[in-house]
Length: 93
Image (cartoon, rainbow, N blue to C red; front, side, top):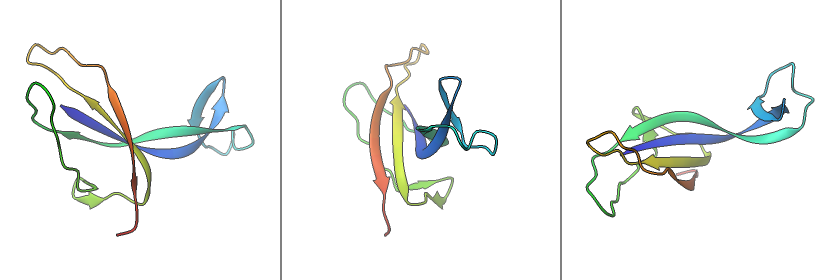
């Protein structure tokens, strides 16, 4: 099972897509963009599972803000499940 962690940021609309903010597109309409900050792999069994998340990736604490975790399970044959998304927030300790 892999969890991809994405941080909520502000982007700009360019050609009907949300793109990261640059000097060139800074006057365009705002949109919400989720930027990937890391990935966590965990062992899981068939059925319901729980995994604790400490708020750290690669030994470093995530900064305060809003995030999404996208979970995808993979079986031994390489088949992937439908991605499941959960929103969470990192607050000051």
